[in-house]
Amino acid sequence: MQILLTNDDGITAPGIQALWNELTSIAEIIVVAPDSERSATSQAITVHQPIRVDKHCIGHPNICAWRIGGTPTDCVKMAIESLLDQRPDLVVSGINQGPNLGTDVLYSGTVSAAIEAVLHGIPAIAISLDSWGNSDFQPAARFAKKLVGYMERNSLPPDTLLNVNVPGVKMAKFHGVQITKLGVRQYDNTFDKRTDPRGRTYYWMGGKVIDSANDQDTDVVALKSGKISVTPIHFDLTNYAIMDMLKGWNISC
Amino acid sequence: MQILLTNDDGITAPGIQALWNELTSIAEIIVVAPDSERSATSQAITVHQPIRVDKHCIGHPNICAWRIGGTPTDCVKMAIESLLDQRPDLVVSGINQGPNLGTDVLYSGTVSAAIEAVLHGIPAIAISLDSWGNSDFQPAARFAKKLVGYMERNSLPPDTLLNVNVPGVKMAKFHGVQITKLGVRQYDNTFDKRTDPRGRTYYWMGGKVIDSANDQDTDVVALKSGKISVTPIHFDLTNYAIMDMLKGWNISC
Image 1 (cartoon, rainbow over the protein chains, first blue to last red):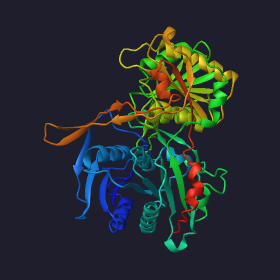
Image 2 (cartoon, one colour):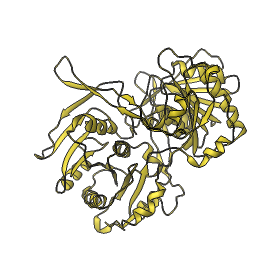
Image 3 (cartoon, rainbow over the protein chains, first blue to last red):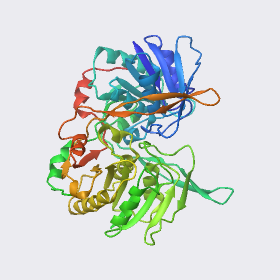
Image 4 (cartoon, chains in turn orange, purple):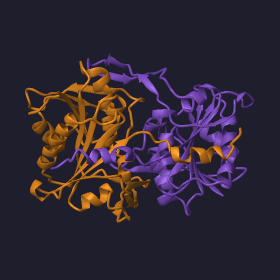
């Protein structure tokens, strides 16, 4: 089995290191990851400038790694369409520093890389840790390995990936695993206005999560309850439910 | 009625100019758009660097405009959360140079800006022209104005925007309007490998559209048939249909 690893925190981030250390015991690992942090890049692709690609030594003699001057989605595209001799059997994206819950997944480079894999017909997992700062990624990496086993024994529809969020606690403190739907994450987005030394204004995008009402079966509530959330995600944005209603508008040109 | 305009081709692009010229007759127009082209930036937001914001003269005395050193999604966020005194009644994103069909919408800055508006509870239209180069955006702008009227007389669910693709022909040659679902767009993504003057390699992401099999009711086929496609798009990526199956995997930690 060959697993392609990527992330949006960059190839030197501890989350992806925890993944390759754990998964190398069950699969051949290939790493194709951004050269620096590319959080919140969503499914952006680099089409207006060239993309740098370097072979990269990660200190593991058995692991082949590339460092990409691009987004997580660039990494998956390049790996599958240009760098690898064969298509990987699975793509794992992460482990992200910080959760990717609810509507946040729309901005997430981690989740978008997994969507890109599924667009290429390759099963994928996006995995994130609900912790900031000096985190222990080992429990989440172990769960990733376990989940790979479940994915080998079962099968997902070809348009679906699994988005996983793991509590930032020791494994013994996990309150189980819950299959969830995406919840709502709202932010109080304070744009912080400042003035540079030349007198010109600029803004920093800040933002604190607001406690939104969320159902029990959402990823937001599951994670808050100490559970690992596993959310099946697909990429068809059509709102089929209102197509007939829209036809009733009788739009003409 | 107040309409916020944005795009991903940048504030000087002819597509957004055609929109403000047309829509200024039916609404107060505010423009908050990127300072340069930001195509294929998906729903990326700028969190790792400051965002420049300037008041910008677009040559229309009645239109207030800001030029943003950020992505289309940054523009919508900043407009609603920081720059405008009141929430706009509608956001129109475009007119994009080139179509945004099927799975392409995942990468589209134009469509993502409209998704961002809907995330803020504001109705939105993303509109793109199936033409490259020296294009006439007037027919598409006129259709946008007409569609605004339909949206005033009817209402969409709060989680849904309209993604519109207009054929690159004169209005008299339109073959009508079709309510569509997103189709499939596949690319033959040739990564073009080159060497810079210092001997280091880099790649350009290229890619030509492959003719994929698509149903009659897709945006891809509608546009190809000379029709304007109108696709209802929502942002809930949960694949509800497989949640029960996944529960049957009995995943433990």
